[in-house]
Every structure is written in structure tokens, then in C-alpha cells.
Length: 219
Image (tube, rainbow, N blue to C red; front, top):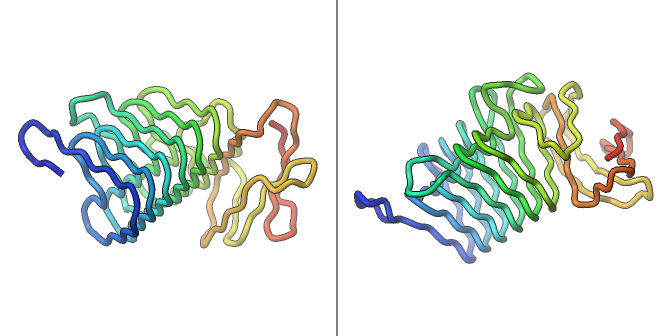
């Protein structure tokens, strides 16, 4: 990363295994962070991945932070922007004024699997959540699983801010018993938001904890 006054620093990750433990930013660039592949594990951080623009094109990124797990700021030369095209993202933040994904500009999701957890105790908050975006959020494909305080709702997702999910293993299936998504929680959270590329307006989905039905919804 460049730290000169022009802020020209970019970080591109194409592969490898990266494990990070820090009290500051796990990965930080003055301009662009581009993740094309590899296994990234940010075990502890203040902000997990931060840049002016952040692109996920592949790889497996697991992030834990005490503030924002993924943060696009307005300090660079461009409008703040987060784009997720592919890959697997598992991002977690605890209770507090925390955002799992935060953009001072826009967020665009066109693919991949995005698994977000936010430890705030209420199902929805104006001060943070799984999504916090000053501009527009667009989701056109992929899978988004947002657990805990949802923050800003995705217009084309199923959202339930009242349900509480306990620690355990979960599966989402459609009406034909096809497995759509799975996830595991290590603590309880209040709030659930889900989007999948299979949504067509008239399909019923069921969320199971182990083999027990938790809720059913149509999308």
C-alpha cells in the first residue's frame, strides 16, 4: 500500500492463505481493495477490510471486527463503493455502534455468498446493523444471509426483525426440499434477512434449525 499524499495505494489479492490479528484495520488501502481469490482470515481487528472502493471477485474471506467488518470510506479519489461479484464472505461484528458492511457511497451485489452477523440486541437500528449505506444498495444475484440487527433492509429480500435465532446449525430449503443455503451460529441473534438468486415471487422457503422448522416465508 502506498501512503504518499496522493493516496494512490491499491491492494490486490489473487490467492494464498492470509491470517491477520490486529487492533487496527486488517486490510487497508487508500484507494482500491480487490480480492480475486485466496483464503483471508481476519481473526481480530478494529475494521476488517477498509478502502475507498472494495471489490470481491472470489476467494473465501472470514472477518471479525469490533467496529465495521467491511468499510468503504470517502477519503480516496472516488465515491465510496463496495461490489461483490463472487466468493464467500463471512463477516461478524459484536454489539455496539457496529456495521457488518458499511459504505459511505453505494453497495452492489451480483453474486457470491454473503453471510453477515451483527450482535446488536435489536432486530433493526438506525445506528448500525448488517448493512449501513449512505447511497443505494442493489442486489441482483447471489445469496445474502444477514443475521442480527439488519440495519438497512434490502428491497428484494425477506426480512424478519422479530425472530430470534439461537446458536446451532441452520438450513434453508425451498418447497421442493432443495437445499438453498446453510449456516451455523455460535450465539443467539435477533433479526433475519435473506435473499437468494432463486427468488421468483411465488416460491415458499423454510428455515430449519437442525430438523426443526423455525419459520416459513414466500419470495
